Image (cartoon, rainbow over the protein chains, first blue to last red):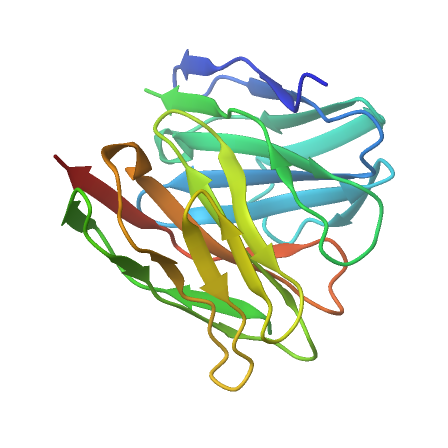
Length: 115
Length: 113
């Protein structure tokens, strides 16, 4: 398996522009997680899905952020409009169906820079 | 709620030194505990895990023991190498929180030759 795939790996955009980050989870994994990593705040869970349904989006910073999972093999995280404080590394992770001790598999991340 | 607290970094050690990174947790019931490692420019990857009290997880010379009496899961390695330079995250999967993980803030380790 190719692991969790994220695109793009790097994104540089200007304030006010729309940004879309993409994730393909590992096949067969029912859970998908979006995280944001910054020096100041560390690793933050933004939202997670189970069977394509958002379960907990309490970590989404504000209405400018939205996430979708239209099918089991694809998810997007969108920021509109983007702001410089959104600059961070965004990780997608996936895991197998419910049960204790399930490892989360992380993608390589998307490094977002908003100028 | 469930949470983990880990030692602040950064940590700098000489090659072959002994490493300890402290991690304590707060949780109801019997969580599972993990250490993840993040090498520069990469995503997090599982280093080791323990699922019940007194379990010892181990991998690549690293060890951590699930201590319920002290609610701790400290990471140790007897002799670090330059290649161990990375950021280490302690994490908890709650007994009643499905597949949601709670991560610590991460501890940066630099090993110098």
